[in-house]
Image (cartoon, rainbow over all chains, first blue to last red; front, side, top):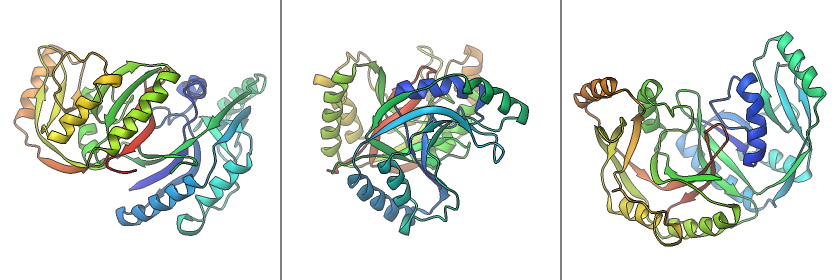
Length: 170
Length: 170
C-alpha cells in the first residue's frame, strides 16, 4: 500500500490554493491542498504498524508552529510545478527531517523545500506564463499548524486520511 | 464552516465502492467512500472546539466493532441513491445515536440506515436499471472498524479530514 504524510493547512489557505489548482493542478481531485512532509512510499501492514507508533511519538514531541506562505515560485526546469512557498521554520524543518530518518528513512536525496503545490504537469509555455502572472501578485498568510496526517492511496490514485496526529498532545 | 463525521472503511472496500462510484456517484471526487455517522452541519470555530472534545470522549468510550457489508439497496423513491447496505451492529448504532444527541444533536428526523453510497443523483431509469443489475450480484465483506473521522468542507464542495478518532484509545 502507498502512504504519505502531509499537513493540511486551514480551510482559508486550502480555498486560496484550490482556486489555482482547479485550473493548473492535475492532482486537483486526488488530494486536498497540502504540504508534503514525507513523499509517497510503499509499506506493508506489519511494517506500517510500527511506523505509525513512531510517527505518534514524533508528533507528541513536536510543538505547534507557525506556517507562513509568502510568495509564488516554481521548480522549473526540474519539473513544471508551481507552488506557494512556505517559510522554513525550525520546527517544520526538524519534523520533516525526523519523518525521513532512521526507521522512517526512505533515502530522500533532494533538499526539502516546504511548499503548497498549486500547479503541476504544465506545458513549458503555460508554466512560465502562469508563473509570470503570479510573480506580480502578492501573498502573505500566516497561521498555526497543530496537526498533520498520514494518508494511503486508493486504486484510483486518490488519497484517504488514515490518521491525524496532534502536535504536542498525548 | 460545514462539518460531517464519517467512517472510512479499508482500502479494499473503498476500492470496491469506487469502481461503482466512478460511474454512478456525483460526489465521486468530493470525498472517498464512507459511512456517514453525522450528516453535514454548520458550526462556528468556538462551538466546534467543544464538540471535538465531546467526540474525542465518545471515541474513547467506544470499542472497535465489525463492519459487514452484505447487499446492494436503494433509497428510491425518496432519493435515487444506490448503496451497499451495512449490517446494523449495536456499537455502530449506538455511536451514531451518541453523535447526534445532547450537545451534538442536530434534529435528525429520519431513521439511521448505515450504508456506503455508490450512486446518487441518478435518473429514475438509470437508478432502477443499475440497481436491478446489482441485485443479481453478491457482496459479502467483513472487517473491523477502529476509527472514524471529522471532516470539513472546502469552497469547492470537497471534504478535508480535520481529525481522526481511534476507538477505545486514550
